[in-house]
Image 1: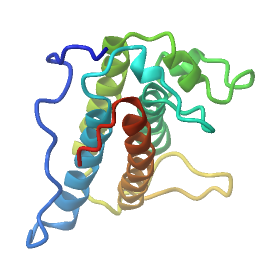
Image 2 (image 1 turned 60 degrees about the horizontal axis):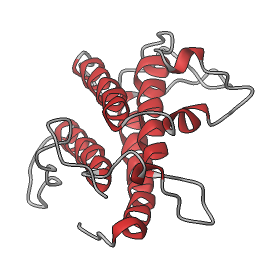
Image 3 (image 1 turned 180 degrees about the vertical axis):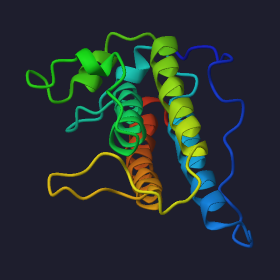
Amino acid sequence: MSATPDAAWPAERPAPPPLANAAAERQSLEEFLDYYRAALLDRAWGLSQEELQVELPPSDLTLGKLIAHMALVERIWFQVRFDGDDMAEPFASMDWEADPDAEMTASADMTVEALLDQFNQATNDSRTRLADVSDLDQMSTGTNRDGEGWNMRWILIHMIEEYARHCGHADLIRQSIDGNTAD
């Protein structure tokens, strides 16, 4: 039984930038990232809390787990790695040693509203941080194990790749729930 759509869900998924778009690089990257953020939510649109936890064997991924994971990924790349800030709750207090997939595990007990709120807070925070970046060549505060940072261009491309991969997973999971194959 599907949940009734409400204001927490996006009214309409944005279209990807048109082929003939002469938009600047940054605008195109931001538009594609927003497109994939919305595409992930679109695959879960209208589902109940129980349906968001349906697995498609042999994987144990669910739409709820994917949404929670991408909220964490947003926080990691924009908040922690790029800006060098501490991780936000609820992620900061999760026991990552006991459960490396703690964000996904926690999603099983979250209401649809809480899951969407967590995702929307993370993406809104990322958009705010991105708005403060004047140049895509700006380097991150955080570094990898080799002491190398990332520029914002790389982070945006990586985020698009991460969402695109998980949207493919989401397509398969959604189709297994109710046959929905909407593009």
